[in-house]
Image (cartoon, rainbow, N blue to C red):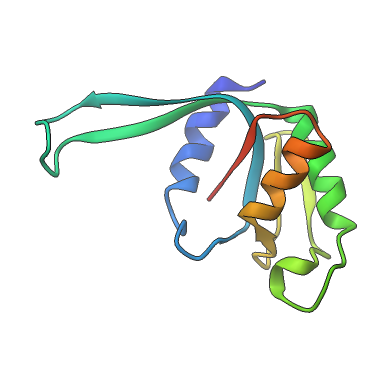
Length: 118
C-alpha cells in the first residue's frame, strides 16, 4: 500500500502503453481519474490516474505470472518475472509482462481491482 510509490510507477507506466508488453506491473485498487488543470478541450488539458498499489496482491500475481506457460508468444511465459519487495512491483527485464494477463491474475487470483503497468 504505497501511495507514494504509485507516483513513480505512474511515471513509468506512461511510457510504452501502446506495445501492451511491459517490464513493470503492479496490482491496484481505488483507481480514479483526476484533472489537475489546463484549458478545457485543449492539448494543455491533462488527466492522471490515481490508485493505491497493493503490494501483497502484486507479489501474488507476479508469482502466478512467473509460473505461466501458455504458449510461445512473448507474454505467454515470464521466466524472468521477479517481485521487488523494496519497491513493491513485478519486474521482467525482457518485457514479458502482458497487461491483460497481469490484470487477470491481479483480479481473479489476488483480490485486486485491476493492474497498472508501464
